[in-house]
Length: 247
Length: 247
DNA sequence: CGGGGCTTTGAGAATCTTCAATTTAAGTGG
DNA sequence: CCACTTAAATTGAAGATTCTCAAAGCCCCG
Image (cartoon, rainbow over all chains, first blue to last red):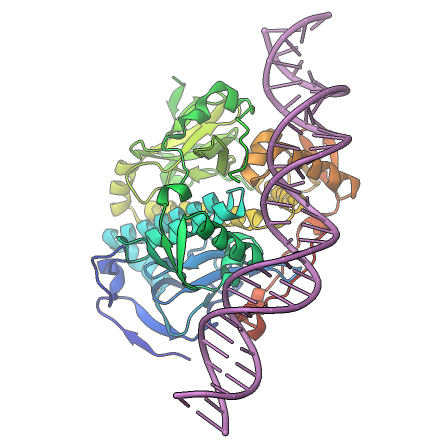
């Protein structure tokens, strides 16, 4: 169903960016597969026979609720690993979000066996898992935001930091408003309104439907540097400060 | 600042439950530390010198926003690992949520070195990381819920599955309503109202303030078994089904 | 028995969702 | 290359939910 080939050193793109080449040991086992838009890369409930890394394009890891609503658990950008499970089957379905998405797949069982005798490989796998953890944590922070514009702003910042161009505040939105909505647990309309809201407040500029320019970075990023306030007695006892919405 | 001692085989509790003993190899390196309520176990920004596993009690991994709101990224129950980071410093602060919380700590650098020559240990660490991933994903699903009662219900189910007693639907709430609120990104009042709402609808019973009985499990769990609907053309194009709230 | 936090409940304000319709963008075929 | 069809994105208005502010009851601990 797709072109497959062996690659010696995975990444075709510039290795200077945030999206570095494959770790050395891993690279030699990669089998690249190209996917159509909407094509499933791996399916929930199926035996987890491979680990993956997105090489180009975009993929989404999603679940569907009984009420029919879809939820995007994880947005996969080039360089991201996925397919890690504690059990022997995939816990989510992953599908390509854009045409021609390229995925590197690694036979799990073989890799684990090799890792047993190749410490460097084992470390690379561990590192990949830790980076996946970090990605999910970032998303948890985003979903924990209160207002919709904050969620969208947080999403934009995350996207900017994970994308290639770091310098100018230009960020390409790789997915539709619908996908963003399902990723941020908002309705499409609210996503759209939040974007125009941020635009009107001068925080961003919409260069095109799928391109935003971050003008006021600080307005989007409102995280405390050191959360030691957690330690304060008041907060520990539950009487945390109550703050008005960032209307 | 706390009692520390070496243990040969970590877990004091029944090994029959969901909370099994420490993996064999890991166990031999555990140093147990007992913490006071509110005491920090590890701090954001500090060098990540240890990996941890909660042995008893409860801990929370949290962040504080610039506006003062606290967010609980991760609720740690006995058996849970934490402290995994892709960088060399902790990305969040972890603190004991109840008095006498016991934590096993493992010197990271030493463990990684040992893992290089002990494949079994390497596998155990990997497994721990994957389980952490799974835990975060579950929380992402919960936060992705639309209504507050759904979030609370999802939280209860998760808690039930992670707690010891599996049979009777009794679930002990190990943290305050405030903590639950910060964990689910809701206000305290909404958490409280959601609980009484679920009670009034006969889905749960409040045996005590900190003990709920799950009566109608299916009313809380509304996940599609196989999210293959993602693959349907309509959904792929964004025109996902729009469903009324579960009022 | 008193104090303080924890929990619950009430009421109004703000936000988000839903339903509906319009506008913009994109893809297809002549 | 333009007209046409369809999807994507935006905007409006009403209804629903949640947050905020306020206050009362509860429970544990000293």
